[in-house]
Image (cartoon, rainbow, N blue to C red):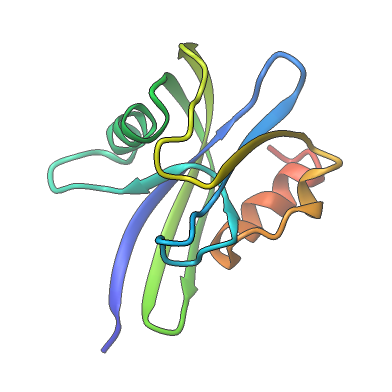
Length: 132
């Protein structure tokens, strides 16, 4: 039986209506895919707490977590991922990639041009069509 991993992702939008996206590095699983930044929920954390912690650890900035956008279950070759995606806004600092290969602020129109990890795609589609 495949392991199920529960993760969270942040859809961080700036004042120019651009969304922050991160490129997974070569040493990471799903290397070369773009994603909404976030990570695994630790024992005892709410999804919102996990998201704020992950963004602080991986991007050296603080966010305020808003409404849930999407809740997706995607079966990869070796693992099943449940990804909960939330709107978020920066409240302190600017994101700096600690573990990721690249980061980019992109418009809603440009977001579908990035090669997103499959679990992120349903949230990308909601953003593209302005449903979030």
